[in-house]
Each structure stands twice: as C-alpha cells, then as structure tokens.
Image (cartoon, rainbow, N blue to C red; front, top):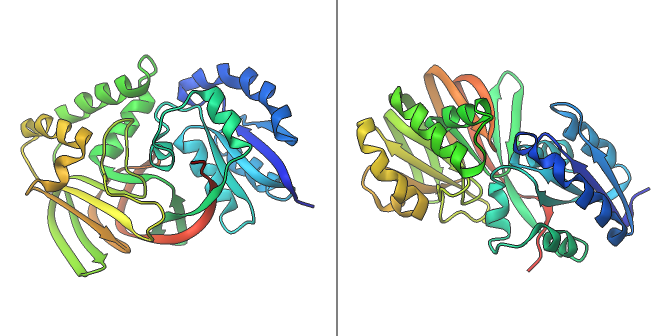
Length: 304
C-alpha cells in the first residue's frame, strides 16, 4: 500500500566519479525530517532503475540522489506509475535541476525544502532506436560532438565538474569532423528538413547541458515540445568562437544555427556515432531514429 507521505531516496554513490559517496551521511541524517522514509543505495549500473520500480510499489515519492544519469534511470523505471520524483543533486553537472529550479541553494537547503515541495507535471523526450528499443530522456540528447564529449568526460577520472567538460571538448575537437545526417523536424509551423553534415546536434527538454552551456535557452519542460539546436557544418577552427555563444545561449541567433521547437524529429545517419542521453553514453548509434516529445507525463517535485 502506498502512503501519501512515504519517501524513498535512491542514492548512487558512484555519481560524480565516486565523489557522491561523501554525501551519504547527510542523506541518512535527513531521513527523520521526511516521516516515513528509507535510503536505498545502488550497487551497479542499472540498479537505480530496479530500486525505483520496487520502491514505486510502496512509496509516493522517489528522490533520485545522483546526477542526470541517475535521474534518467529512475524516470525510465517509473513512467506511468502514480509516484512523484524529486532530485537531490549529487552528480557532476546536475543539468536538469538548473531548469527545474534555477536559483542556487545549498545541499542542506535543498533537502529541507524537498519535504514540503509542491509538484508539477513535466514532459519527457522519447527516443525510438528501432527494433523494439526505446528510452526516455529527461534533459537532453546529443549525437556526434556532444556524444563524444560525454564519452571523454567518463573516460577522464582526474577532472571533475565543468573542468572535465572543458578538457573533453578540447580533446574531441582536435580530431572531429561534421557528421552526415538527414533530419526531418515537425514544428508547430510545419516540417523543416535538413540534409547536410552537422557539426553539433542536440535535442533538449531542459535548457542547460554540460554544466554551463545553454544549448536550449528557450526550453520549458512543461510546454509539450522539445527544443532542437543544430550547428551546421563549420571548419573546426571556428568552433571555439561558438563556445561563449553556447554558454550565453546566443548561438540561437547565429545564421549557422537552426533552433526551433518540435513535437518530433526523425534522424537518419549513414554512419554510426556516439550519442549521449542525459550524460550517459550510447555507442555506435546510427541508421534511423525517431525522437518525440511526451507531454506532461511525470510529476516532479518543484518548490518555488
């Protein structure tokens, strides 16, 4: 039986390259503030989803304690279940929280406010890989450049946070070339088609990616649409000039950038490449993909 005031904290100590483990004590001390509450600790990749599915049978609220990847696992496990989902940021970037709760707060204050939070229904993105394989995303996906950057971030243990993304960007850019794509975008105003090499391809539900890059500055996770940001082919020596634009969100006004709201996107790639989904890396993604907005499908804690 599910109680209205029951909480399960799903804690990933491996988040932020293992540095999240140091927050375990803070979480355990906070449980008494939540009435009926328990702390479940992940032990392996994919365990957060398993714990979330089990917890959704008895708890009214699940708190994803980790990064965007942990939140992604929890959300994918409970889509359609009568539960609310909250976030305790313990990852390296915690990008989706920057859209859901833009003001900065200490971890202690975030925990205090979670118990009395209101909630809102949010959209998700859905990627159909074909052959019965699909997955939801909460914040964003990126193919090519940002997929390879996410892969490099995972591979470099000696940097953390925004510094790791900066190092990965430089490393990937050295050997990078635009990716061949055929893209069809269904927008509120009609279909937009693009068939040419693409330097950077992102589809977002949240505004921020990689800690500080405003890939989709107009994103609203409750508007029923996804935000598409495509940087068309440019010489790679020009890309450093775009970095500041991406940080500020002004790249959407650049003539080499296609930015629009979309209900769905079809992508065909003749050659496979890396894709990230909420920071988690999927290798050798290619062929035909369908990406679609799924409006107002998850109830998330969202205090004022």
